[in-house]
Length: 384
Image 1 (cartoon, helix red, strand yellow):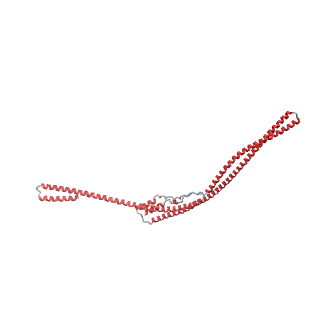
Image 2 (image 1 turned 30 degrees about the horizontal axis):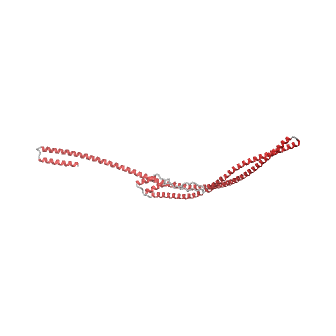
Image 3 (image 1 turned 30 degrees about the vertical axis):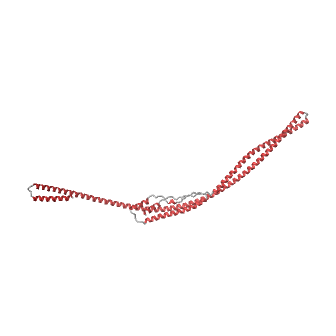
């Protein structure tokens, strides 16, 4: 139970307060930004609640540990190791970004439609310009032909007048019939040429009038197409201005929302730092207590080790003395055994001598047997 409390405190006292700071969200140029901002406020409130709960847990754990009785050696060492162990950071809580919504979609769509209409209106203008260019070429050609025909008619009329004047003079003043005949023939030929030229002039005028009419019709079509193109252009400019205004408005709203979000984030980060500093202070104090306890335990262990070493030395000296005493006793015992063995041998030799000596009496033998028995008994006791 106590080890679990220590481990819990070690886990919560790490640099994981920032894990509950809100993740930054990208700003949107739309009302959706305000929705995101509202969601951000909710997240900040949730974060604040989580941080307060964590700090309360840490404080409670520290107070609970302070009320516990002294730990045994092994348990105390485990507690110290837990308080100084590296902290595993908690997984960050990342807010899932909402699906972005473009509030300028309608304005952008209107611009796209206006651009398409403007492009469609430009096609008839291009076609009409090509037709006007072709009609202008035809008109200019027919006009040039008419002007050429008019010049020819004018020249022929002048020539005819000149021939008529010369013919009149020749008839009145000259009696040269050949000259009169020649001038008459020239007048007739010039009249024929003039008649033909006037017919060609009439045809050229008719062609010019038709070309002019066709050019006017095509220019009217071009004017109408250009008017339609101008209207489409104005409509496009209007929609582009609407989009520009809406974009500016959205940018201003997004900027304000972003500024507010930054302020809220700054406040949250400040609070998180304060909570973190508080938790670190508690952890530092707890670590200090743990280190103090560790030093006390180490000192106690050194004293016990020193005591055990002294006891082991005394025991070894005692055993050495006992071994020396036992050795001396064994040597003394061996000497006494040797002495008894020698005495027994002497008595046995004495008995043998007595047996061999016929002089000796039965009483002498009896005494020798008694002495031998006593010596043997003594030797047996010494060998035990």
